[in-house]
Image (cartoon, rainbow, N blue to C red):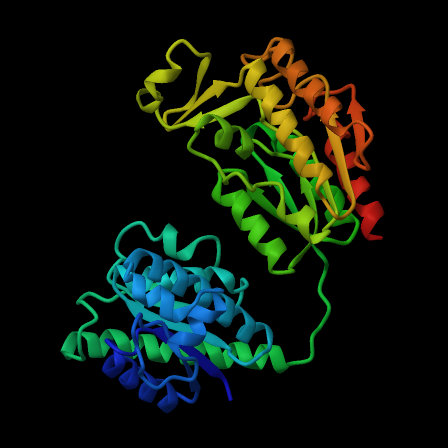
Length: 404
């Protein structure tokens, strides 16, 4: 039978969770309860003490400090470890949590620890605003509770009833998929793309498709890079043509399309073959022109469209990007190659283009050369621009050599 993990504060929301459990069981699924109540002694399959222990903390000492922020952080960490472990062991087939801002923040790490494809549902008072802190890069569903999670009434009965039916149905479908004989599909490859690297990315995609792969293209807008790396973490992507690493520039300088400081690390840490390039490292992204921070007054700016303003990276910024990329690639545990387009890293960073800056590009190349010298990373110093014919195809062929 499909099992839904219900996570929450069973000392304060016990009645609501008991009602939900009945509805889930009536819909044909079973329930496993995980208690994240700070001082809870309510009966649960996984008690709050076990959640705290899973985070490596001492329950008695933690409770003695009575620091709510610390308690929420620890509960979130412990819940994530427990839920991930239960899912990996095949003991649960769906995840459900309900709550306000505190309960949702504790549930968020558990939601984001689950792989793409595993059913996850959060009913929250926070679901009508920015939900990125809760959803992250996974396929989580959020349902607005409409009223606060405080008892069962004529409104919450309808909302929570829908939630129970939804997660029970998803869990049963997931269990059936897991039990069905698997039919091998085409291996999944991730390719990163930006508007100014589209020709190269399309060439790589077409070549990989020709070679028998299914290609997922990710728009390197911050969320795109994080989504790709979540799929790598979930074990769904077997190789990467990381052609467009522009999100690293936004992370360094403060642009709006950062994927965070750990971008370009997931494939390497898991040993997934990766072929990397420097796509669009000539630019940092902002919104409309009037949103560019004042500190960048005087910098070279280009209105890409009414919603996007690009700023050219400097030699100093490019040198730092080169150092960071080199360090990330050296740390990789799997096959890693770097393709360096010596005549331009984007469609507008070519001779005569608005962002052409030979000195800035050279600073990037020099830092990479110094950082990778003597390493196991294979480097291709390509006397072409990134979008020149054959560049994307060569990257695809390099990756295929590791997978064939």
